[in-house]
Image 1 (cartoon, rainbow, N blue to C red):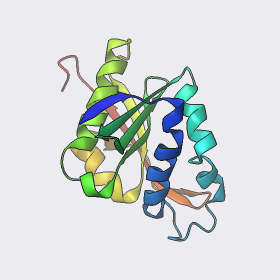
Image 2 (image 1 turned 60 degrees about the vertical axis):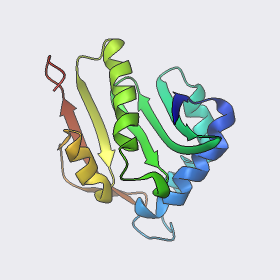
Image 3 (image 1 turned 180 degrees about the vertical axis):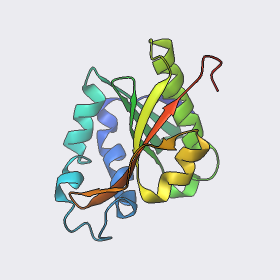
Image 4 (image 1 turned 90 degrees about the vertical axis):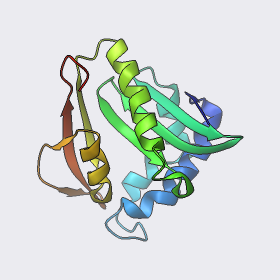
Length: 156
């Protein structure tokens, strides 16, 4: 497996990966009411994140297959973290998160991160050390729980 910075040519594959999992993010499994959110995971929108100066976007590949993606916005907000179903529960999400977390810390992040977790991903983020930072939010056809992580000076 290889983790590398995303290129704009990865945008279509990243969008396909996230869209394949979008039923886990939307309130309605068919995406009705979540059109605004779905527009944010289009190939064009992903290309914008990948090429934006305030995003660190990484992908995981096995052979030539994109199997995971992670994006950190402004060195503090975990914006995307997705792993293809066939590769879940193998530590890939943790590896992707660790990669962008360590890069952010190296660039001066003092150890504070946020994420808007989908309800089904809450246990994963809790295992990463995030704690709920507010009530469940339902807006634009999606539901999420705001979470925060503060890392102590020893990296724990």
